[in-house]
Image 1 (cartoon, one colour):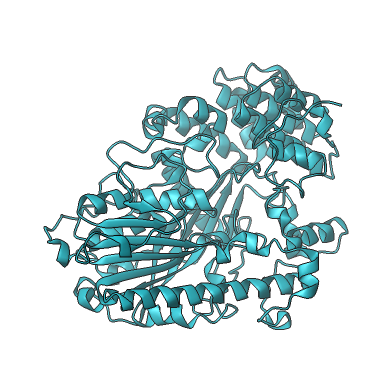
Image 2 (cartoon, rainbow, N blue to C red; image 1 turned 180 degrees about the horizontal axis):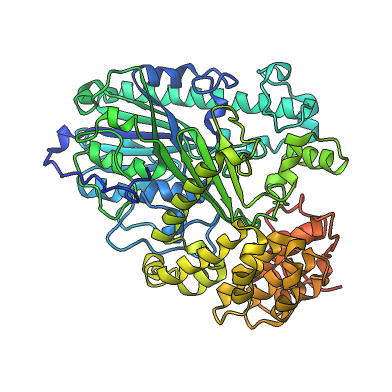
Length: 624
């Protein structure tokens, strides 16, 4: 079950406590690593004895999940206890900061109100405006040691880039000269990777990174012990999302969402936990639950509008937690690359819904492709040297994917078309659809709409437009039907007065491709639609089936607006056609004028200069 969406949430009653009776909390966060890189969680991972020591003195959660597979979205979910698509924080990174929902603050602010000294070292990366009074100190030097009184309880969070994606942006020279502690010949490669010396070296190098993280954990525990507060402090060690080899960070597979989580139980507060130290718990816990859990352990009330529920503390039985079996995930824009994926995992079954399925996972993302392994993988694809599992990354996706993780932990074999699994597929589809409508999911509007109209109060905007969002979901779900069954409804939607009905109808047609050729005449007028995003979607459909050259429409949209998000969406479509071997509509940087900031990443790509400037340029691009 998904907390607060499918059952009545647990409301924690505040318990009056003196400051000296409150436990401390330390979050040790390693950046960009899924559970697959620690032997404590996965046989192919690195030995991390100090993280293992935390588990020996606490609880190892074997099924912990970031709700989103990238930094800012995941960290905002962690801080707010709220689902990103509900509160407008689902894009990495935000094009505009979202206001926090009314009656909710970041959970550290409640701790501070209750007398905690709160510190952050130092990464925030929020997509929402930080709540007032969240931190006493947030900097590279912030520490619990600076609190005014040794008796004051504290919450401290520290994030460590030693495992960040950038650590795999090594050069060819470094690859050739620098050996790794882990033997590349001995590493376990995921089966969707090509088995090459470079991929083996890359994984080995990352396993080395995890051992650096382990030494940081050791040092942090030593400081707590030196200060005499170790047995008063709950230590949470976890990764902030998955990664960081290709198909991890930024992708809503288990490699992007399934994180390691260990909670060390302090001796002086073990009475708050109804389990022995050194146990494992298989229950599903997600980032929405971390804030409520800390508040509960501190004896504070959990705000009713948070989406998560506690998994530790008074009123929470670990036997009940072990029965929790559901998690919800989301993946939207990552830098300049657009995506819209929603996931529902129940037990060992994983359902993925792609709303823009014709975009391959392997579409250009400048920062991702700084990694040599990413580039080699694409080169091997272009040479036709990949097997069936390895090639999937560069192909259009089905609109629905269903995986049995008990037999297919790497999510390679899609069971969505198997007749024997249709009852499960339909049930999970219906449950996910119910979730998206109940949020409601703001991504049913193009990001430029949210930028212009929603970010002052995203939750209110969603509530006011909930009925329309539900109808847009229904139209988008027409791509899940056989085309002959969906055709009449698509025809009606293409002619709707609602521009976003037209938008999703054109998107569904783009997915059906040649099957939807009969609707091409209805879609042709949309190339001149008053809504520029509808024009882009119509170009994707009609360009994808070879009915028109989409470049004129896309270039016109980019050059006729100074709206950065409209440009970004249109340029994503340009990149899709630029890379699509089937349609072969290449673009040139000289096609575009006046593009700056985030959209300029795409211009750099078209100019073949993106490796020198993967984050784009602030200077304007001028036509030659």
